[in-house]
Image (cartoon, rainbow, N blue to C red; front, side, top):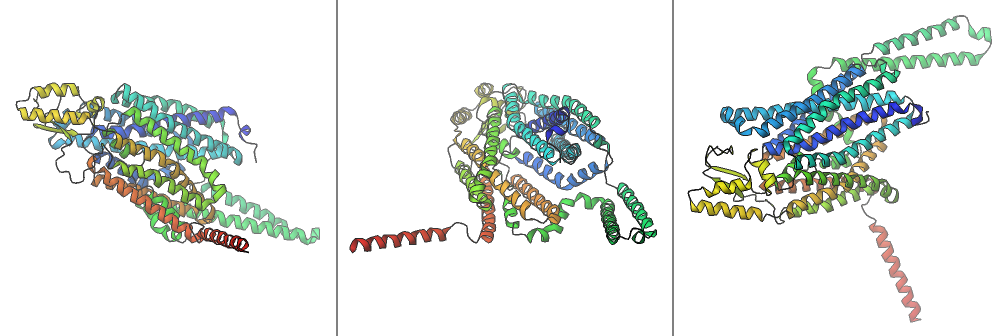
Length: 618
């Protein structure tokens, strides 16, 4: 075993770390910005954002295994190069399409009948974003799952150190990138933010490739061929056969007689047996790889669903299955910093700058949870740590439930024609605002400040002041008073509701990570080595399916005034997850809390009191 990070040159590690930092910074900027882009190009509801999220989840289930297989088949440098190019160029193209839609949305709407070109633009954004995500998956698999192992070789200490450093870099970028991107989008503009993300990825792809090429040149192990199609394995089998044949030649010369040593004969027999076992093992591996290679394309595409179907019996036989179901339930929620919640908070008046800070605060809270997890686990045990993790999460998410009825909440499930909208009556068709689709235009009520309103209403120069000037030219006094009253109501809008929502989500990240890490360790400790792959594959598929169910739920109820229903459903699923984990804990430990010890303490106290009374009486 090696001696740690000193076993390879420092510059190789620095090249790997710097390349990873550039890649994850671009990923984190894009994942933050895309949530805002989706709600800006479609401010009337969260449906486009939900379709985007659902498409991402479906693409992972359908094409994730195919990307991994392609990485295995392709030479290392070529795989990394192609993944980088697809990832970065797709982000560039997608950001430019988003900027075009934001800037010229009105013209795009009017270009084709029934807004056909606008819908086509949405489809193009989602498809290109899927390519970017698959490229990101390919880069992660190629570098973090393959290159790092070859770089470290047999040095497990070095492998642990490098993977931990890569994780720290990712968490730091997750903390800082949303803040930086939010400030750019807020103090400059959303268009500038899109251009900045596009420019970063365009420049970054060249730097990342140069760094990876240097690593490839400095590490000879990366040039070795991969054991994929069975040919290297067959060569190894021929080597074993030849070695075994040499041993038989030695036996042909009657080594027992010549050496008069029974021990030598037994050793030769053992060597032959080992060689046979190695040959059988290699044959089995080769046959498995050939079978995998012969699988039809559609089986490979639906591998995520097939794993879930085939592996369910293996998965459910473990007691930890109920803990895993509890973990999967945590994915069926809008109470997290995904595109849905970011978009909803934006429509409620939270600008890009504050949103970035809130996401960073959530990351910090999650990191605190990762530190509390081992500290608490050593004192109360692993199973109870999970119970407390769920408890902390549910406790903070009660703030999110309270936000539904707090001042400023848009919740109104029976709303048909919203009274909480800004009505622009009889706008002239040539006023330069772009609001020409009819005589009545409605915009979400809770877009309160003038900056957000500017960016949401028409992607043009219409401001609150301009809207008020337009209102002065209305022909009807009643319409004037109605618009003025709505403008006054909008100015009085409270942000208490959305602040409660964000506070609950930020606080819940601590308990969420405690529960997540607990369940992950339970699977690592109790699942058989030969079944880890299938069990973890089932767990991943369950998590992704619950995540997709969340987006389907949002597609069915995309309006901000029914977002409270989504909060309640999400809270219900998290409670179900807690109950499922509690069932596992009860089955393993026989109890949830030490009520028996409490009763013993109470009985002991009662006996002591009685003895004291008897002594006093005597």
